[in-house]
View 1 (cartoon, rainbow, N blue to C red):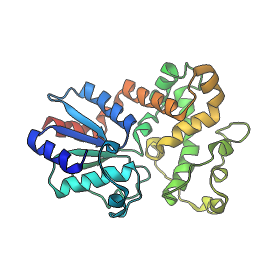
View 2: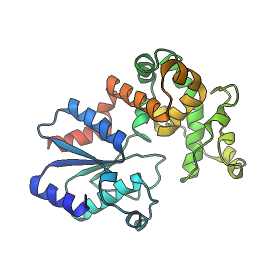
View 3: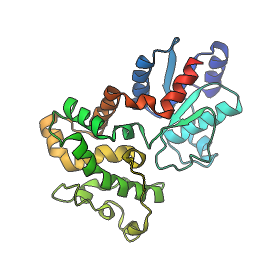
Length: 266
């Protein structure tokens, strides 16, 4: 759909529209809306359904990608005074301060999957999706935190980082305890890794970069997840994490969802 068509539809119908990055986000927010129980239908649309080209996002100083497309839609909506909401992943905070629009909401943490980074939610995922085959949620959280902190530091310093080599990081023993982040990056970066500033927050959700969570679980526990649980892909592991987030439900009291609920109810 062309943005002009979407904006005209909103102006004529006053229907609420939420624009998100992808299909998994679409499904997550639709599940949230079931519990939020809005008085009227809210339409959730992945940005790939809208006609936003690479030239348009490059023109506002962003790299091409769905996150940037969501930001572009929010910018256009503010310019045209259109009442919709766009939700983009905070990631490592790049471009968050420079793109500040009423129509744009950033996730409270790097991504939707980041809301899973507490002991209760990880244990819920363990019981419901991992057949109890992984360590207890609190123990698993402690195992993941150092690796997630190290990976976030590297990502924060390198906005367009190539996919890390997680298997190299955990080594042949598949151990998170001896995770070596310098082995996950291109050799040209390895000498710089030690100098990157690590996040100091005590809340692991703040430095749990979305894909890193599932990738680390597969790197460390891949044999169990694939052979004993039937979760073969990163997408399947991340779906389990998002389902646990929904099941626990504490995410609903986070600022993003409070602001969305307030806007929907207005």
